[in-house]
Image (tube, rainbow, N blue to C red; front, side, top):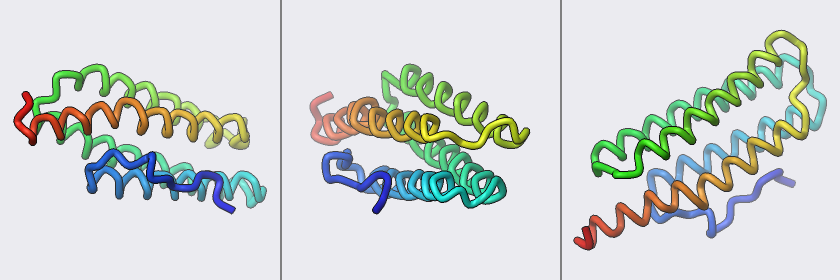
Length: 137
């Protein structure tokens, strides 16, 4: 069973971002599987690297959209992205040093942050885009 199951409530109504969020959650599931099966440090490092790479890709997509739509809350949203990247990098550094196997607490942090970000800040951005496209702004 998947660690996180995609739900319609996660959809923000912007297909490109929804598709990326689905991929993001799949990568979280892979990371959880690697950790929970105790498949070894190498596979955990590999899964974490894939997750980090995709995080950069996804955040870049969002940030490009902020510019395209002249999003007034971009700075706050970018702060959330920076915070998350910093946290994930610290996890990666610890794993690379073999000081820490990725704990379930770490995976739970990644899951909780991702879901809260999708349902909060990303939904807010989607609402802004919809409003702009409907001519409300």
